[in-house]
Image 1 (tube, one colour):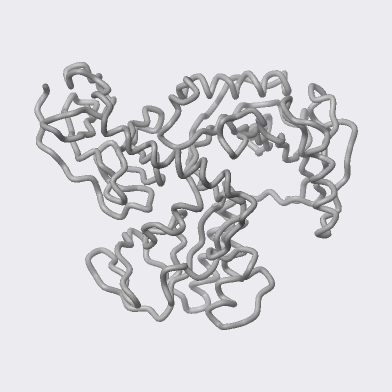
Image 2: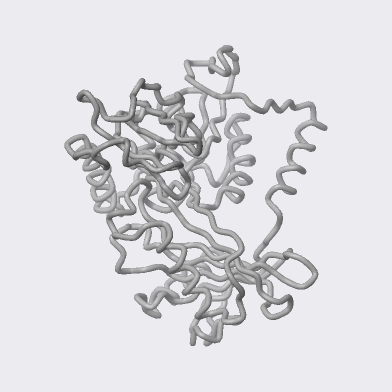
Length: 395
């Protein structure tokens, strides 16, 4: 579906941001338009920048089409295949070694790169709610603001909104925002519930006909320092290509990567190669780099902190925490039946201390974004191994 997009000012921002964006988009051939009001949101008095002819489509249907195309052209797709260590032309998958002349790592964050890329991008958590609104009350469009210019996070967390068909009588308004560094919500003294409430209040102000929140969830995005994805040859490998740094634009980057990496493998010239190169260095973001790296290094100081709870007996059902036990940092979780599960709380990627994510019921790495289920199973790289189980009784 072809719809317009509207970028409007966050209360902390100034008109110069929209004017600069307008000039930049026109310079690269995007025919944006400055408007005096925000269509669909009378609460926002304007101005806004209109992006015409944006696309909105069902991601699963899009992926289904891609899968069918791959199979029709002789490709093969294997599910439940856990990718592990990459060594030259070999990659370990489910205890098998697979040989390939070229390897593309499109796993959200690279699993084969221990250091280089992980100092150029950082994990952030974003929150989303959806609410019903009577059909026909809003035009189908995309809306987003310019972000909180006073935020301590370099990403300037912003609100993003879109409308989605629900049934014959209602649409769903989907709104996201309230981002923070993964594993560090305490920096702003706000838990997940408060962030969801903030989103609900924000949308209710701008869309008063909304009904109660139907669904809510959170997700993780990788934010590169210069806000442009890394697509191309892996800096540390001769035959490995990576796709990462999506900033929540994975469908767009995946499509770009399918074209760009194909050209690189076939040694064809591509005008985007330098723009998205994982080897690029942007001197304009040195201060942001130092800020983010110092934040990452600071997370290792968590080793010195006390246990989050004094005893595992305090741990309620379906809750987790990090405790000190016999000079070890231990991740503990009590399941719905009351059984206690315990694991080494050190991320197997580069040794950062994990944090309990009570919203998603996972253990998350605040340094590089690895995530593990409450039973210690890795579900998000760059870590490739599960957490080691530890025998711990209630203390």
